[in-house]
Every structure is written in C-alpha cells, then in structure tokens.
Image 1 (cartoon, rainbow, N blue to C red):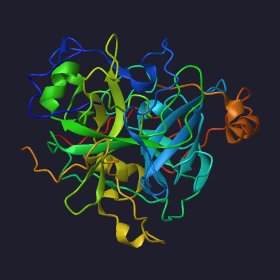
Image 2 (tube, one colour; image 1 turned 180 degrees about the vertical axis):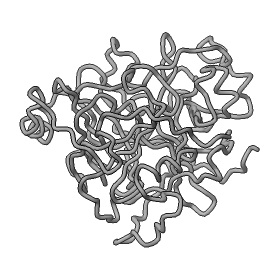
Image 3 (tube, rainbow, N blue to C red; image 1 turned 120 degrees about the horizontal axis):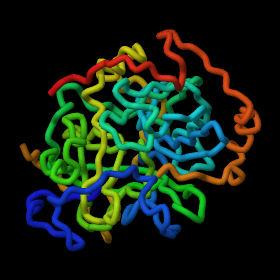
Image 4 (cartoon, rainbow, N blue to C red; image 1 turned 180 degrees about the horizontal axis):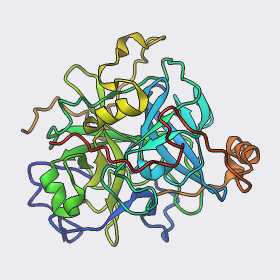
Amino acid sequence: MLGSSGLLFLLVLCGQSLSQKVKPYFIEDINKDVDTTNLRIVSGWEATPGQHPHHAALRMVDPTGGVFACGGSIVHREWVITAAHCVAGRITVVIRAGVTNLTTPEYISESTEWYNYPTYDDTRPNLVQPNDISLLRLHRPVVFTRYLQPIRVQSSADAFRNYDGLTVYASGHGRLWTNGATPEVLNWVYLRAVANPTCALNFGTLITPNAICARFFNVTSQSTCQGDSGGPLVHVDPQGVPILIGVTSFVAGGEFGCHSGFPAGFIRPGPFHDWFYRVSGVDFENLDHDEVTEEPEPETTTSPPTTVTPEPEEEEESGEDSEEDSEEDPDLSELLKKLEVKVKVKVKVNKFKLKKKVHVKKRIPARSH
C-alpha cells in the first residue's frame, strides 16, 4: 500500500524493480513468523474522535472458537461493507462502530448475516481472489451521532475511474502480529493511488477493473500493512466529501511484504451497486446523507501533523487474520460462552432464501467496464 506517481517506472525499492511479479498475500498472512509487536499502521497517526466516523472494527468467530480481526465501513444504518475473506467460514461477527478506542464504541452488536459476492469462493478463504467484497447486515440498526456516520460509496459513474497519483487514506486498528493484542486506538495513514496497469505489473490478472491499488504517500514505510483487512480506502472529492473507493484486500507477499514499496490491492465498491441492491434492497448510490446527521460533524480533519507530513494540496486528476486472545476482550469472552460455538450454530434463512454464512454460488456478474 505504498505510493508515488510520476516516477513510478523509474523507482527501484529494496533492490527490486516495481515491474517485478510478486505473489499476493492477505495482510494478516504477512510475516507471521516475525515478531512485529511494535508495528501497526506504519508512519501514520492516531485518529481523533469523529475523524473517521464510518470506520467499523469487526471481530469474527470461527467454528472452533477462534477470534479474528478485520475492519469495515458503515454505509447505511443496517449495512457494513467489508472483505469477503474476513467473514468466509466464520459463524458470527461482533461489530464496533463509531469507534476510535475499541473500549468505548458508540455502537456494539453481533451479526450472523452476511453476503459474499457470488463469484468469491468461500471454500478457499486463504486464496487471494478478485471481487473480495461482502455486505454485512447489522441486526440492530445504528443511531448516527457526531462520532458515527455512514460514508458515501463510490458511484457507478466513478466505478472504473483512474485515481493514479491522487491522495487517498486508509484507517485501521492495526494488529500486534504475534505476541500481543489488537491496539485499542484507531490509526490512519495517507497513501497515493496507483493506476491499474502499473499495479498489474506486480500482481498480473488479479488486478481486474474492479480492483484499485495504492502505495506510500511520501515515506516508503507508510503502509496499512498492519491495518485491518476489509477496512476503507477513502478519497475526498472536490466538495470535501469522503468517498469509499476501496476495500482493503491484499499486499505483496513472500520475501517482500507490505513495506517493500510495492502497491497493495483493494476492491472498488462502485462496480457492485446492482448486486448491493439485490441483496439489501438499498440504493447506496442515492442515499440522502444530508438527512442522517443527528449532531454536527466534529471539527476535525484528516490532515497529518505538519511537522511530519504536510497536508496534501488539492490535486489535479491524472487522466492478517490475526487470532486474538479472547480472554483480553470481555465482550468476546461473553459472546463465546453464549454461542457455545463448539456445540452447534443455528442457521437461519433470509428473505432471499439464502442461508446465512452459506452463500449460494449463483453467478451475478459485476458491471463490466
């Protein structure tokens, strides 16, 4: 997740050409054998309350009782967009929203209802796949506050837009990869978007029109490597409105890792509006977000400290699941007791006659480019 634009083809980082093919890994699978307990979102900043009001922290439970972490984006009172690989094979998800510190969320609830895009193979969740996107339904609708707000979803018109060189940012609670728990405070970092043809030099056919890539903003260590999979990649439009343009999916793996200077991959939500509507009955593209604010927006910005990174100027357009110790989280410990996950899980059928967590492999193609 590291970026630059004009000199893209001239850069050589860590002795490796940026045109080199690299194997994609899910973020949570990077450096599993390395002690990186002091790392999270790198060269970023701790968020202030209300700065990223759309960010959701997800904790998934699998059939053995294992607990895993991901991120997501609140896009509606009842819906979260996240990565399909985050929820594939899980039995329940705990959602914290309106969250800067994990211990004091505006909202916390449990869900057992999510829908992975039909072309995503749930039986192979460890394989990096295209269309790694999911809709998660909130059983208890959120109440919007100054600290909890939905984010606008990339429009169909901008679904395949070239963001090359534009400033974007990502947020995540990060993870202490091997010998620690998830950091409590939300972090965020500036990145630069990378054109799909450039990104495809590294990741090949995985970079479909439904993907978008980003790299560091101005320091090669800037990364969301230890941020949550499924979390948001955001671009601010000319009117100052944050737009969800990507869902965190994968990074360069093998000997390289996410700090190597290679781009990271995200899934664009814009191409999926037809499918979103079929699943949810909600037109995310035409929501009137002006009517959802119950309290004034906080006077915060996404500008980093000027002593470290100057606030980006207005730009012209250029045409791991980390297993956690459930004993450290009282909410999850209580949830596991309640679920008795080692006994059985009740599966309900939704109004579309699709079993929750069991995704019918009906092919619903994404909008073509």
